[in-house]
Length: 112
Length: 178
Image 1 (spheres, each protein chain N blue to C red):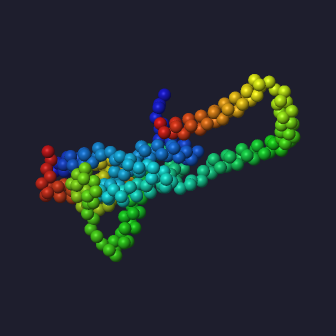
Image 2 (cartoon, each protein chain N blue to C red):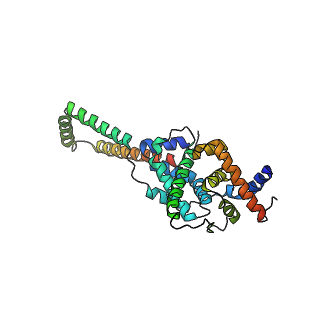
Image 3 (tube, each protein chain N blue to C red):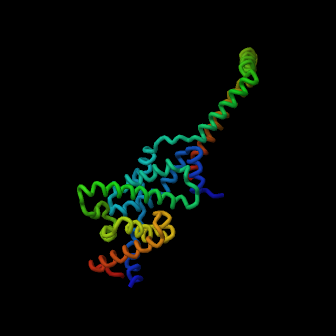
């Protein structure tokens, strides 16, 4: 009797069990409603890195090094050949490209 | 190399780096079972189901740091869904004392058999939850107990009572096993 009931119900519920509900904008609505989650680990890590950078900058008299490097750069720039300037521009461009690509890869891997 | 990230690595990305795209992927994976669970518990009320499902995902997002991987992410999410529904029924009980209306299936989804909702409408919320988790989501008694926090023995009685009520109703209405 009990097994008979089980079979009857399984038969009735089999269609409902296979039902797949389409997104229809549900995911977007959820993502829009997500509150700002304070990520303490990330915040603490960022604060720690900034602190270390400031400490090192002060310890090694960073402002003096920066001023000297800037002065050298300004004074030697007109004497630099075209290829030297090109290398500088390309280096900055590649740096930006790598930063952008790594951000894209990290977000896209989450989707897969 | 696995092309699909596991739930655990997605959860880690959300918990550690606050990666919203990782959470978007988790919602994409589980929106269907969670919304279906609520549709069965609310007897086909799509609007209410979606609201409850949204609350479930938002609670999961806010508490993702508490996920300890003792159970699968799916089971953990279903436990949150159950708690959301439990809170909803408790809050509704308070208003029902003032304005009592019997539960009736909401005919919003004509593709789903109304027989299912009509049969589920006969059950108490806990019986309906256990029946839904077993017959639709395919969980065994241990998992149902884990999700609902109800003792295994009580889950068994809910299942047995619920099945008997539904089978009697279906037989009375001429629904026979093919």
